[in-house]
Amino acid sequence: METDKKELILNRAIALFALRGYESVGVQQICEACQITKPTLYYYFENKLGLFKEIFSVYGEKLFRSVSDAFAESEEFPQCLSEIISSVLAFAEEHPDFFTIYYSLSTSSLQTESGLVFSEYRARIDALFFRIFQKHSEIFGNMRGYESMYSRIFQSTLNFSVFSHITGSMKLDGETQHRLVQTFLWGVAN
Image (cartoon, rainbow, N blue to C red; front, top):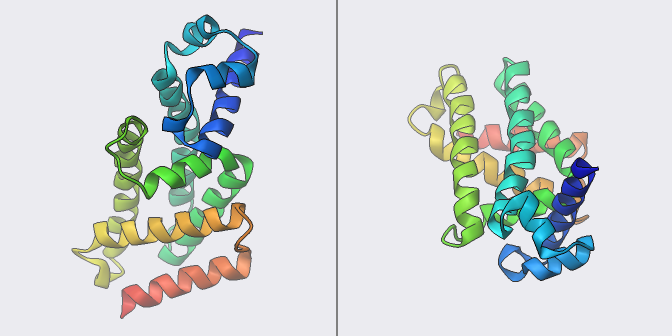
């Protein structure tokens, strides 16, 4: 029963944060959406910031794992990029509200309370993408010395494409994913 209530609070808060943004949502709004009292929210999460940290602890970790697993499953760089796109897309389709928060924070100032929470997560995901690009720069020589730049460009393109897919403004099907990888690799090669 306690796990169900905690999960309910997490899910309703994610929906509110995705819709309005972290800074625009108050504790009272979360409590009303969950039909709980403030002491109940504080029992599970201490405060709104603790709730937001838990969201990234749970869902941010799931996203991190999906990218990490995709990286581990493929040796060739084009295949690795395709696997990462597929894994992030599958995650975003399963958790569209969290991905909306993630995408929003990835394109905004990190000087806010939510941005500071995100920056801790972003450092981990950036390091993972850097390792992916560093590994493949040994073979794909044009990336040498530019691994950080290329990994950031790929992340931005990936996040924008996945966000566009889950909001219905672009279909990220197999053909589009293939074109995305090919266009990116063409840019690196030239």
